[in-house]
Amino acid sequence: MIRVAAVGDVHLGPDLAGRHRAGLADLTAHADVLLLAGDLTRHGTVEEARIVAAEYRDLPVPVVAVLGNHDHHSDCADELVQVLGEAGVRVLEGEGVVLDLPAGRLGVAGAKGFGMGFAGRCASDFGEPEMKDFTRTGRHSAQLLEEALADLAVAGPDVTVALTHYAPVDETLLGEPPEIWPFLGNYLLGQAVDEADVTVGLAVHGHAHAGTEKGVTEGGVRVRNVAQPVIRAAYAVYDLHPEGTSRARSRAGRHGVVTPGTGA
Image 1: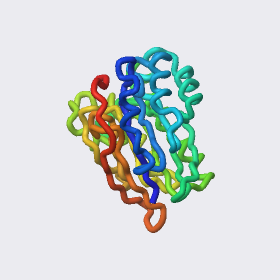
Image 2 (image 1 turned 45 degrees about the horizontal axis):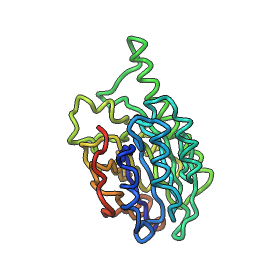
Image 3 (image 1 turned 180 degrees about the vertical axis):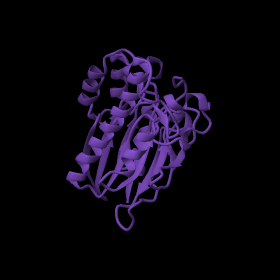
Image 4 (image 1 turned 90 degrees about the vertical axis):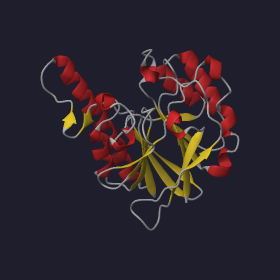
């Protein structure tokens, strides 16, 4: 059994320095890996990235992340990736990584994603240039996830987690105003998960602070919204069983402390 801890939308800033670290003290007792589902900072500044790096540096389990929309706000995403990388946090964007864990080989396919909406009520590649740009960005974000999953199909992990910031299904957006769903998720991300040539046991995302934790893709892959305002803990844990099923079972638990003051 591979124990996957995950959280997103911690929105760390100077006033929260050291607060989130306290909730990670017993991480190894509950998890084999920690996934960060984007929006690690409030405004995407290098100063905030250094605070994130300090929170997650030198943990006893591998830490893998994607960035979120907040992390891009200051237009220095490359610098954020460098700062986090120096702290041992592997940031993925259109890439896959295989982790050799005690219970098996876990693949993590990571891409931030982007909005576009969901089948039957999504943006279309028609009309003004701005709308075309929005739609094409949404399509490209799904292609990046496809590429990450394709990388892992070659590597052959026992089971894979799809890690995004934007939601791959609309089920986990329940609680958010329907008018903003096209800006919170993208059905093509879910399609990429379902059509992957690798066993995906779980998809995790953040971004939807007022959403719902649990969902499922059309193909039966479990989806979990791990935005901290949703799970209300330092992380949630999901158990993956690489053998015996193509769709791994999952069990959620809450661990650590809630970090107040997360961004909107």
